[in-house]
Structures are given as structure tokens and as C-alpha cells.
Amino acid sequence: MPTDVVMPQMGESIVEGTITKWLKKAGDTVEKDEPLFEISTDKVDAEIPSPVAGILSEIKVAEGATVGVNTVVAVIGGAAPFAGPAKTAKAGQAAPAPAAVSAPAANAAPASAVLAGPVNAGERLRSSPLVRRIAKDNNLDLGLIAGTGSDGRITKEDVLRHLSEHGPGSAAAAGPKLSGELAPLSRMRAIIAQRMVESLAISPHVHTVYKVDMTRIARLREREKGRFEQKNGVKLTYMPFIAKAVVETLRKFPIVNAAMEKGPDGSNGSIRYHEHIHLGIAVALEWGLIVPVVKEAEEQSFPGLARAIADLAERARTKKLKPEEASGSTFTLTNSGIFGDEFGTPIINQPESAILAIGGLKKEAVVLTDAEGNDTIAIRSMQHFCLGFDHRTIDGADAGRFMGELKKTLEGWDKEIG
Image (cartoon, rainbow, N blue to C red; front, top):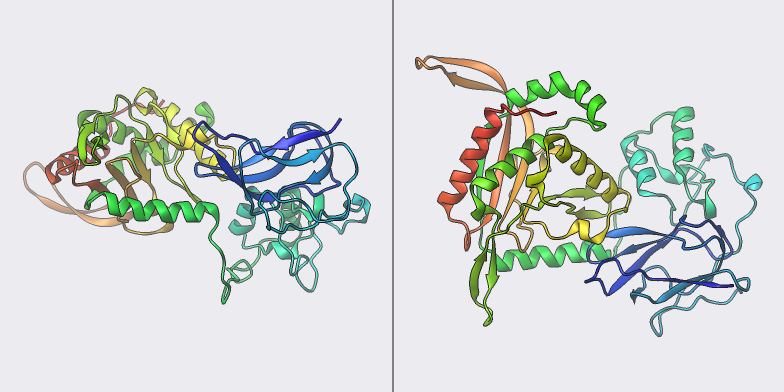
């Protein structure tokens, strides 16, 4: 009995989705819950699993097509695929013909084979976000690795085997090869562009930068990271320290967690003071940026925050987030410091009123003054924090008080970390 595969509704407000990649081709065998295709919506990018086991007999919607929820995009079971062109969801939109059934695995090239030229020259590489991240971290050119997965898909085992036999590549080998190309915007990139322009048009942005002495936290983290990971099952990074301090400071200054709401006539009508702190954590992806949300962060313990942040970030990178986990934030953290910058001047994540950019943590020579007024020079771990805020809602004095309290909390850290 044939089974229709439909475009899922990824949240109540989602009405359509774009198929960005088919992970199987017509004629392939699929298992129940095996990733079948990838979609992009205005909330998340996600892998969609197969609803049943069987043969993917027909692909009805081509990669790149945008269709409404519940549209049939493929059929599993039924008659074998024919060689004609696949149907598309939009009139006049051409789609590639379904590919032939893949050759038996015995005919595949060895997973770690390195050829004189790229294995996939002129073809679109098929791999998961995890595989691409491993390749990026090890300067590997995926075009030189023969994939043993369906339709030549490069699997995690393929890339790890290649690393074990040949080691990491050179920086030049993994560099971008886009010179002279004209690349269309992905759906996520287009949405990011639209929202950034809208945010600047909506909110009068002001930024204030504070330098914070993170030495106490740096020493505590170095001393406790092994025990913490063993006890809580997650690595101890600086982010939960910052997140916990931010949450506590937001509770003292609720205006920074508030939002401007328009009146019935479209004018700035009122300020919404949120009951809870829904903490957005900006996560950089290979294909864009997403902001998963720790809901009711004020209720989380320090280990709970650490686990929630690590879990959301990992599922964002592997396209496992649910739409509701990437919406509803009331305040956002963005850690541009991981790329080495001193500090950034972030754009507000609407409809919030503020966003905090975390700069790079660096050791500096700092003048310290003791209680008697004596000055000494010491090496300290210093970090810049930049608050971007909506001046309609937050005055400079409010922002200054918030940042001063945050600085005091981080520099004088005296809380249990679990």
C-alpha cells in the first residue's frame, strides 16, 4: 500500500516549507524514521524522517521548491519509479528526473580512497552537518572522499576512516572555492537579511561596552571543569556563567527584558514586561544563524542551564530543533568572541529590546588598586561585553545600571556551580 510523505507543519504558525535536500533518491530503500529529506522554514532547518519503511517510489517535489504544509512531496511503496521527470509543486517549475537505483554496496569505492582529482567533481556533495563540521575542523576537502552512503552520501564513518588513514588536510585544501560564482540566497539567509534590515528600521539602536575581569571565573572553571563534566555530563564552558549572571541581572532590571508593543493605530503604545526570562542563545551554523531559546531560564540551576545550552546548540547544528525551541526569546546572547574579536555591536533580535554580545576572553596586563590605594600590575583574564539596546524602551542610565550589575556579578562570582 503506497504511503504519501507530506510537508510537515513545523509549528502552529508555519504554513510552508522549502525542500533543501533529498537524502534519498527514487528507488532507494528507506527505513522507518531514517532521515529522508531536509527542509527550511522561517523558524528552523530540519531533517524529516521517513514515516514508514519501504522503497521511495516517487519524488514529487524537487529540491529548492517551496510548498504548503501537508503537500504530498513523495510516495513510499507502490509502483517502481519511471524514468520521466519528477512532478513539482509549482506550475512551470522543472525538476530533475528521479535517479536510478544505487549500485550494490560491493561496487562502491573504498571509503577512504584518495584520487588524483575530486571524487565528486561537478556533482553536489551529499553529507550531513556533522560530517561537514568534522571536515571543516580538519581542513578536509570532501570532494576527495568517496562516500559509501546512499547515492554516494559521505558518512561520518567515511570521513573518520579518511582521517585515520591520511590525517587532516591543509588549510588551503578546505578553503572556500566560490570565487566568481553567483550564489542565490538560501531561505535561511534571505530570512536573516530581511529580519536584520527590519530590526534596524524598527529600533533606534544604541550600544554600550564594558570590560569585565573574568579571572575569578576562569580559575574556577579550570579547577572544576573535570569534576563538573563527570558529574553533570556536559563540558563546563564560560557560557553558563554568563547566562546565569545575565538572568539574575535581568530579574533586577526587568526593563531590559521588556519589549515595546504597538498600539491599535500602529504607534508605540506600551511596554510589555515579560513574566519569564526566555534566553535566546545565538548559534552560528555553516549555512546561517539560528537562535534557540532556553525557556524560563530563571527557573534553571547552573547545571541545568549548562545542559540546556549545550543541548540546544548541538540540535541546532544537526537540524533537530523543534520550531517552538527557536522562537519566543525575550533577551539574546551572541558569542562573537569565539571567532577572536574584541567585541561586536549586535543587531537586536526583534521583538526584544536588548541583546548582549560576548567578546573574546584574553589575558591582559591590568592595573589593580588595593584598599590602601596602592597600584600593582597583574595578568588578568579580561573580556568585553557589548549591550545593544532599543532606546525607545531602555534609557542609557538603565543600560548602564544593568551592565554595572552584570560586571559586579561576574567579577565577584560566589555562586555554587553544582
